Image 1 (cartoon, rainbow, N blue to C red):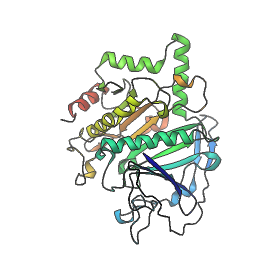
Image 2 (image 1 turned 180 degrees about the vertical axis):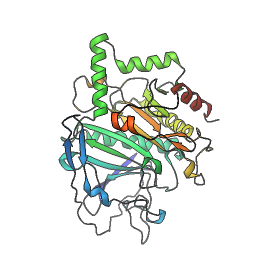
Image 3 (image 1 turned 90 degrees about the vertical axis):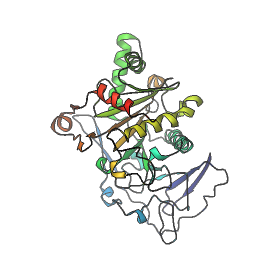
Image 4 (image 1 turned 45 degrees about the vertical axis):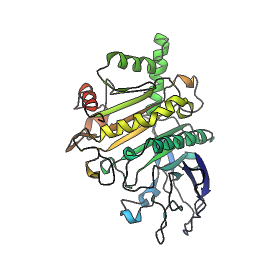
Length: 356
């Protein structure tokens, strides 16, 4: 992998990750951009203890541009973009409209491919491995920043999720605090250890593997299953077989096997509602399953950090081909989820649509 670090015309960092050592990424950003001005502020809810990012400047972010004006495509003659090069493998840059900035953290955009019409599921295993390398490298770098407490790599796909740019991409949020969801996991982990002396993550994965009914994939180095109390209609949790706290700690074997496993899961998600293989430039993008893919990594500097288990949660808000799961009164008002699809049925469906 070749890594090239440069700056955009407004001073934001841009990093290219290329599979070829001879890739030339010296093209400068010639846009006359003004300096980035953000108004990000972190406020704490005194009743819930949650943190909320107030970021009014995001009202001006780019919203559903036509393909010929996509800011994530490579730069073309007369059509400059956030990527000055005329092509790239993977590119990561500081978000121009960040939710978190300065002492309040950092937000980055991860472009998975220069192909505007592709999806992550269309990538080759080598391309997916390069994305994993970029996630890992950025996790290592962001965890070193003094203001960062937790690094979150994720992808939103589909208009139903709220995606405002159609180009295949994800994001990385570097929070200045431990997120509420992670804090709840850590509390459960500590309580279970106090009560039993065992690791709750290890026992959860072992229980799913022993039961087997909710297992979607079980390989030499990864286990994917629909959790017993799944919140979403189709939800898969993917764990490395050897517990590690974050992406930087994955061993070579797990890292090598990940692209095949993850691409298979994504392609199954594109099949669960009868949308064909969901691959290639001629695929019906409207039929592709909308999803969120979220890496859960241990916060920085917490006690017994190695007890946390890195894992990826992949889920969709679509419950049938023409219906979405909305977060209505119980979910939004009380954070009590009601799932219309039994986890065992979801797992069975995800096994049925395995790649032939």
